[in-house]
Length: 295
Length: 273
Image 1 (cartoon, chains in turn purple, cyan):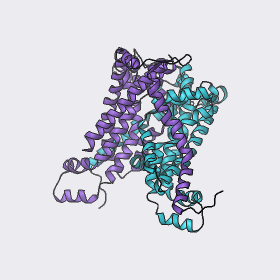
Image 2 (image 1 turned 45 degrees about the vertical axis):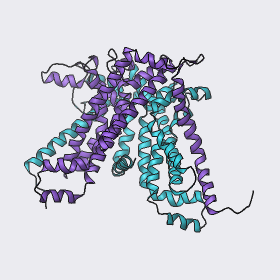
Image 3 (image 1 turned 60 degrees about the vertical axis):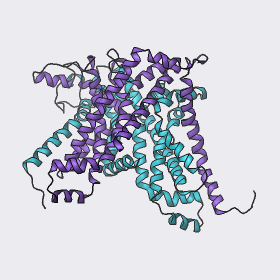
Image 4 (image 1 turned 45 degrees about the horizontal axis):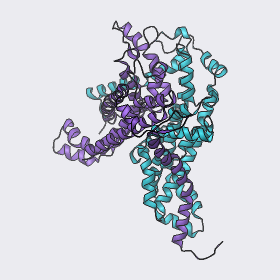
């Protein structure tokens, strides 16, 4: 080994590169190379067994003219546009009041939080059972006992999507509540005291102090939950017949469509093009939200 | 000032308690159904007049649920250990060392957070197929061994570790790796536990990639196993609920044991991450 004196600075830089060698190889091989791969496969027609044929943007053009794909996109946005406002509104209201409660606080918080720790696949089957027609499903059983009409839930093209969305909202609430409560706790008490001295009512304090102070928290939760709802998969795969996203594609979101295209039909090029669409949607939505909410 | 129970407070408390019951309903009914026979399933009594363990016995003797549990534990634990070690090491290096290319590497790793997993599964699948590691443990674990999220989280936390501590250790003659393990890591245990919680939970519940990469039932993780089992056992809801209960029990148990740490960890990971 060359024993030439090295400065401490050089020696430490050497350690840094030693520490980073394996991680860099990993990130290049398992993140960057596949990312480039997804883009390049999206420009081909390929059934995984045969040869790849380069077809330019034909996959994207085909998607543009495919009514099924537009239906899938519209479902995906329906999950987003229902899921985000409902879950954020519910979790904020619960967090706002739970924060003021002392008696049994820890127990109530645990009840709200535990669903977040469950396995989405397991809970999808529990909810699927709840939604079954009468004599099996407990929701219809309860409705029946109250003498209210029965609901079709997963068998209806209009009710199925909200029915599939419900367990996704339910499971995410605990996380959002915890984050909202942490945000509320982080607001300095002096703000409230000053407002009280000025004679502000609790509604005014909520509007003038709590909400503006919670802006970073709200931004974070909107972005995170939007990404989550745009990528919904586990619930739909497990709650619909044969994991098809039915009835009549009424619940099929983009990720399930990608899965079916790639691993049922083995149209790898087309599926990769769909993942590129997902990527672009996520980027645009996130950028828009950050722009609007951070100002 | 002592808390006084006004009518308004009592109303808020009652509504919150009702909400809490609603939140727990699916979990309670799942466990309740797992102790029932098929023909008792349809009465709404939570505790059946003749509770039975027969569903659990059936699952353990006639299905591969135990194998799937073991698989899930192996995958989740290996991935979590790897993420803890490497993400801490990367975060530490990017925070505490000065060298050319540091910012570029940090931004590059951070940018991987923008790439959705769904976009990577197709290339991963093709590479795994070419390498012959489809349907293997290696195939299950390789996508998760390091994460951009963890690197970011750890880097944030190492900023709170004073350089003087590290310099003191250098004077004591520890090498850089020893300093990382013996001096720096113990100072960021809250961040490590937050990262451990998120990584373990994420892998325990992961569905899409395990569904894609495994094809033989011996290698299913618990979500994939449960999904395929439930698809076959349609209408045997007490069996499906028992499987779902088995899948959910470990994380719920861990929560009940470590509640305070987990909630703190989720807040740390959520806010700093």
